[in-house]
Amino acid sequence: MLKFSNFLFTESREPAMDARVIRECLEEAKLCDDLGVEVLWLAEHHFDGNCAYVDPTTFAAAILAATRRIKVGFAVAQVSLHHPVRLAEQIALLDNIGEGRLIVGLGRGTAYNVYEYQGYGIDWREAHDRYAEAEAIMLKAWTSKSGFTHAGQFWDIKAPRLRPECFTQPHPAVLRAASSEEGAMHLAERGLPFMMNVQSLEATRQRLAAYRARLAAAGHDEATIARCLDESWVWRNVVVAETDAEAARIGIPAFEAMQEQRRVMRERVYAEQGIRMVQETVPPARVQVESALIHGSPATVAAKMAEIDRTGVGGVICSFRLGPMPAAVANESIRLFMTRVAPEFQPRQAVAAE
Image 1 (tube, rainbow, N blue to C red):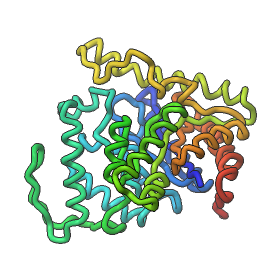
Image 2: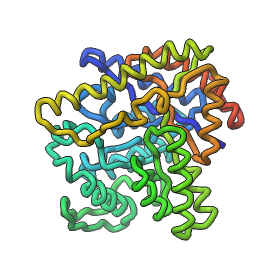
Image 3: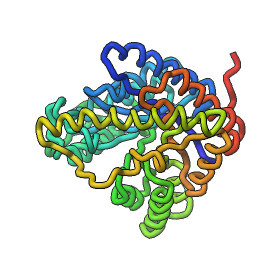
Image 4: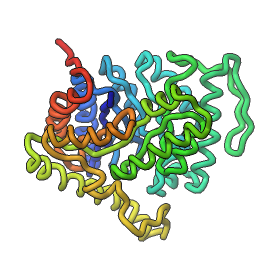
C-alpha cells in the first residue's frame, strides 16, 4: 500500500529565528514518530535559511537519538559538496545510532543555487562528475573489509577499512534523486528505485509508466520491477484542514511565500554575478499551486492521494510545513493527515502508548 512520509524542509527567514526553528523541527520529528509516519526526510541547503538545520547528517543524529521507530532519509545529501570518505564515515555512524533506520538519499547537489557551490569553493559545472566519483568511493568504503585505494579525477585515496562498519550490511539503503526523465530512465536500466521531484499528476503518471517500461526493456523481472516501484517516492506539498476552504486559506499563501523566499537569493546572485544555473522560460510544476500543492479536507486530500496511488509508486514525500507557516499549524495538518487520510490506504498506524 502507499506509504507516507514527511519532508522536514523548514525555512528560517532571519538568523535570530534559527535556534527556535531548529527546536521546532526536532519536535515535529518526534510528533511524526509518535503518529507512525514511515520516513522523515531531511534536505541539505546552505547560506539562505531555506533549510533551517542546513546539514542533514548532523541533524539526523539528533533525530535518530530522539525517536524510536521512524526512518530517517536524506532528500538529498548534496554529495558533490562533501569529501566522500568523510560522508561515508558519517553515514556509517548514523546507521549504527539508528540501528538500521537510515535511508541514504544521494544527489549531485542543487540545480538552482550557484551560491551553495561557491560557498564551498566548488565549480558547479563539476557537480555531476564529482557526484558520480564520490558515490563510487562511498560504496567502496562501505563494502571493503581490508581498505581500498582510488585514483580519480577529484580524489586520490588510500584508506584503511572504514570504522565503524555499517550496522546494515553491506550498507544502508541507498536511493538516488532523479529530477529529469533521463535520470529516471538511467536508474531504470540499472534496476534502481528513485526519488522524483515535484511534478504534475500527469507528468508523474507518464514518468512512472516510462520508468516501468524501461525496467522491463532492460531485462529486469517482474519481482525487480515491483520492488523498484515500491521503493520509489514522489514529492508533494500537503496541507490538511477540516474544510477545503480552511486548507486553501492556510496553504496557498504559505506555499506562495515559500516559493518567493527560495527565489530571492538566486535572483540576487544573478543580479550581482550574471550566473543562472537553469534558464526557465515557463514556471515549472514545482512552483505552481495547481501541480505542487495538495490542499483540502481529509476527504479531499485522500482522493488526491488515491490518484497518486494509482500511478503505482510506493510512497509520497509530503512537505507539511511550508514557508512561514507556524509550527502549530503544520503539526495539526500532520495529525489530520495521519489520523484521517493515511488510514484510507493502509492499516491504521499505531500511535505510541506512553
